[in-house]
Length: 199
Ligand code: IMP
Image: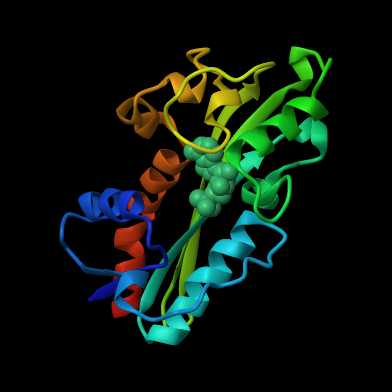
């Protein structure tokens, strides 16, 4: 059985390969010539399915895609599905962080709650599909701290440890992050899904 990972991100490919223990032949977008897939959905779930379904249709194989971002309930869910391009189409991480900090200027801690979301969706050519979601709770800092990670990590404070995500090592972050939680949920559902495909 083959599974195409709808990503070219080396880190993601490595992390998923490790979890699936070579029980399935893993391919990625590096093995196919598929143009970028526009993420036109209004939710993380929609975007994950758009990517998984498109890659499955273009390759004729089962595909897995993920979509992630940061949600601030006080800002009605912003940056949400626009996390990567919050301050414009070519936004840098610094610009996105600054925009969020500015919007939350003088907003007290109780309203600075936030969570990272990761949705993983799997689509099989038969139309069978499933998805899982991981949420990492925390709150938005008043200023950036730490140099690890990427994206909103310098301004996201983990609820449990009080550390900014950018202060954590990759190993520490990979144990508690939204992606880690989604992957755990994925591994729980995966064997059942494979069984269903064989029915
Ligand atoms: P993607 O769906 O994995 O490409 O993530 C979309 C955007 O969400 C990224 O460009 C980041 O801005 C943000 N994001 C997702 N995961 C993280 C994370 O673990 N740390 C910081 N920012 C993240």
